[in-house]
Length: 450
Image 1 (cartoon, rainbow, N blue to C red):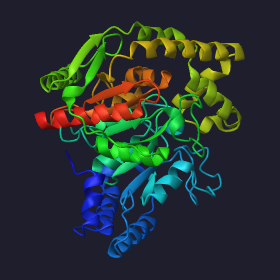
Image 2 (cartoon, helix red, strand yellow; image 1 turned 180 degrees about the vertical axis):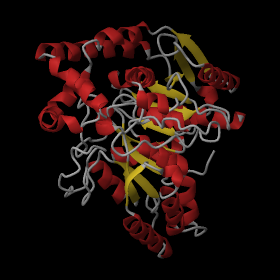
Image 3 (tube, one colour; image 1 turned 180 degrees about the horizontal axis):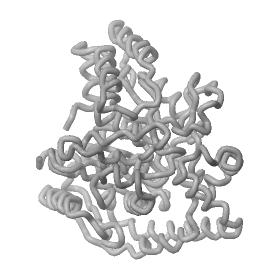
Image 4 (tube, one colour; image 1 turned 60 degrees about the vertical axis):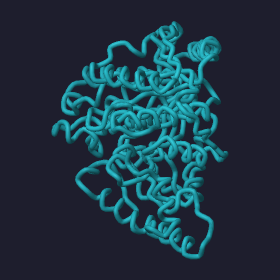
């Protein structure tokens, strides 16, 4: 495993490195070809100032801050004072700069983050692929050694994932409405944690779906994910450091194992075998409620309806300036009636109640995060049919957890040097610490096996 934020912070506190030294390395990566199109803006001067301040605290023997002056990137969805929040669109590029930090950014800044820059994303966060026609699409750095052809980074937190995968940032602030943290984490061999949505305020972030939007981070390890969650949720998170042998896990056979690419299926089965050999109980279960999601969301689901409410005036005035694929998905919400929306909310409440009953006997569920490895970029640029089919495929598994109002973490389960594959550890609402505990035990077992 690559060195993570917590280990690096410890080196800085011990006087074996400085935050500024690490910041300069991150800044060099951010400006490198591997990060092309990953950042919309880079604030090296501001980040240097934050890193230098943290180094002075260390020199004075002051208690360490949680982030220790290390570089964190910010998705272009979140207000940061003095910066324009445009959600990687051209439509909002001329809006006034934010006068205040949103809660998520304020909490990271207070924790000692060196905010290195704003990252690219699917326009208005409305895609799991990560393509952006306005600012270019960052290529997936985790697949470059396996195939020189550009592959998608995953979305919508595309630039955030690339910033962490290249070493330009130690963690990336992002959002997750249907998998926008977990999909790019899986495709880039990283960790992405989607908490229970109510735990982190979305104030000061441009909404996609006010029902499903979640604020979280992409990191290099589970313990970094727990640290970032504790900071963003403003509540302590203490991991139990339990072994895999005490875990009782379940693999739902319904839906989430359908149509797996062979590389994904092999990595997933290998991970299950490793966990069983480590002493974990891994049951296979039916979860028939998952097959109901297509019919529940047949009218388009929450995202188009709630996005339409936010975008309808902008679309009437500047619709030609939107990514046509994004505009088409938002416009689906125009046809949803108030009665349809109320029916959808009720159907979701009933569905959550029934699913939660089935999850009570296990510490967490296990599924492949996405059923495919990172697809080639070029075919998705030229074909709407290929794009929308791939987008639906990438969203299928992770979006179920947003519908559940649950929590989920994607961590790498592939053998080093192979195609990145994500293992999703998940459960229902407010089981966040249990999922993080299980994920840490799973990560430890998988790393030991490699």
